[in-house]
Image 1 (cartoon, rainbow, N blue to C red):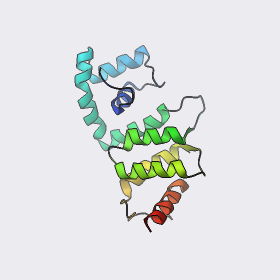
Image 2: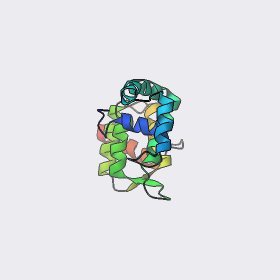
Image 3: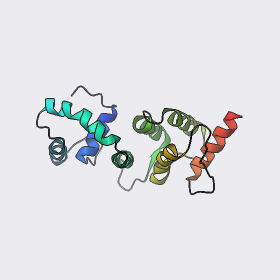
Image 4: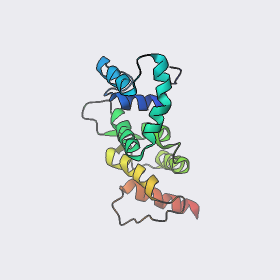
Length: 164
């Protein structure tokens, strides 16, 4: 397919196939995905990727992909959180092209802070909501009294201190 394994399109393909296990597609998942993409050859699959990218750009589909990407990275049974290093890579992969500045600063913050070793789904979804709703870098629209995950309150404090 000529797509690198770290390309976000691989994640999109896994999402379309509803793959449950990272780096592995069952025959059923593969067939389901190819049917949904109307691709029965590698050539047709390559041609379907740009359409899949368009599909993912729709806000409801993107949120679904974003949520899926977190679940897809849970590799152990009953695992509910992902380590900071993996989250930084995932943020860059999934949100980096849409929210470059926010993602870069958030990754910088996550790497230097010491309060959190892992991120849970609520925090993960909070990152996306934050990027969508809060003006950056002035943070207009940000209200610390609203129900943001604490890690985002801490991030805003860190950013404001950095800006002064």
